[in-house]
Length: 161
Image (tube, rainbow, N blue to C red):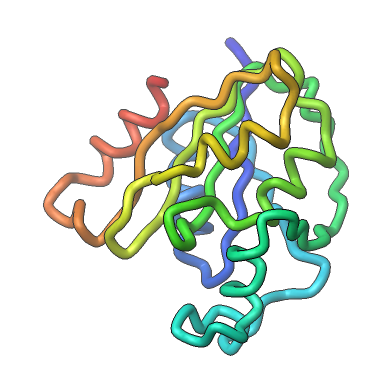
């Protein structure tokens, strides 16, 4: 049996819940990507162009600092990477995570949470943060638009990638 990891960034707890479900469903270990400076509600106000999330997302070079965890990604054969979708992309803190470890030769399956959007341009934006030998695979999105789709179907679609 291959060793699997669900790594995720969650600003409000929604992605954390989905990540925990996926880890349980797929028999994976769980790892939270934690910001060095936690996000406040004001930081996450997507309607405020001065908010931290807005500024970081609209600054392509932004790399919010993360708390470096005790994890050896070389141990895992499959990595599921989850995050909320912000303006059609992954938050740049996910790029920070990818740039902090060596994912060479790994397959990374993306999953996200969103009010209505899919993964958007997330794969394209994250590919710049890994080696050419890392494969980024679009998984699926847990969104309000998918409310009629059973969670088990979404989990299965991601786990089978």
